[in-house]
Image 1 (tube, one colour):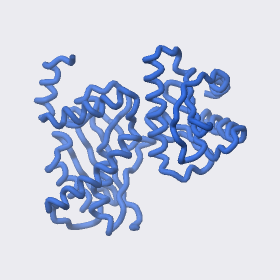
Image 2 (image 1 turned 90 degrees about the vertical axis):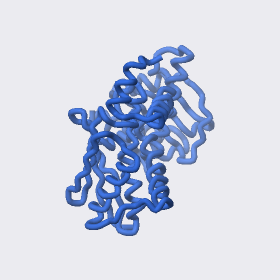
Image 3 (image 1 turned 60 degrees about the vertical axis):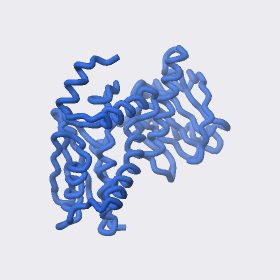
Image 4 (image 1 turned 120 degrees about the vertical axis):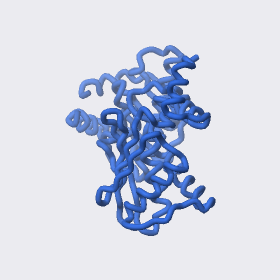
Length: 122
Length: 172
C-alpha cells in the first residue's frame, strides 16, 4: 500500500505539472485522512481532507440516486478547474486541489482515461 | 422504521435520553448523505469542545485543578463526563505527558453507529477532538493539548473499547 501510495503521489505530481495553476495535491481516504501529498497546501489538511471526502461522498450519493453507473467513473471538478477529484477505489479517493480558496461549483464528469491510468498503480 | 424493541434495548443499556438519540441519529443522517466523515466530524468537534469549555466557564462549573498539565486535563475530562456523560463506562488515565481515554463502545451515548444506526465500517466519533479542544481551551495558558493519531485515525477500537490518546504540545 505504501508503494502504491508513493506511485500515486508521483502521478499526482505529473498531473500537477500538466494542469496549469495547480499548486498542490492531496490523496485522502474516504474518511478524509491524508494518505499522500504533493506540494504545500498551507491549510488545515484535516479540514480540507474532510471536505474533499465529503464532496466525494455527496457526489457518490448523487450518482447512486441518479443511477449513473459504476462509481469509479464518477469524477468531480469545480469551475475553472480549481478542484479535481477522482475516486480510485471504493476506499481511496484521489484529490487534486488547485488553490485553498477553491470554490465548489460541482459538475459530474466521466473521466475513464484518468481512472484507467490510476488503476494501473492501485 | 427501526425495530422499537431494539432501540429500547439500547435505551436501557446505554441510559439514553432524547438528546442522545437526536444527536446520534442526526450525525448518522448527515453521513447517509455523504456529507459527514471522521475528518469533518473531527473539525466540527473541535469547535464543540471549545464551546463546552465556554459553557462551563460561563456557568462557573469547573473543578479545582491540581498537578501536571495532563493531570489537570484528566480532571477536566472526568468533570465533563459527569456533566455530560459520554458513555456508561469511561476510563481516564494519565500516562506521563499523555491522557488515555477509553469508552466502552456498547455504552457510548452519542455513537452515530450504535445509537444513530449509521451504516459505515469506520468511525464518526467526535470525542477525541471534543475532549482535546475542551481541555486545551481551559488550559491554554499552560500548554497545548492535541489528539495523538492512532495510525491515521483519532481513535482505535480494540475489543469493543474505543481508545483515544491526548498529548501535551509545547506551550504557545
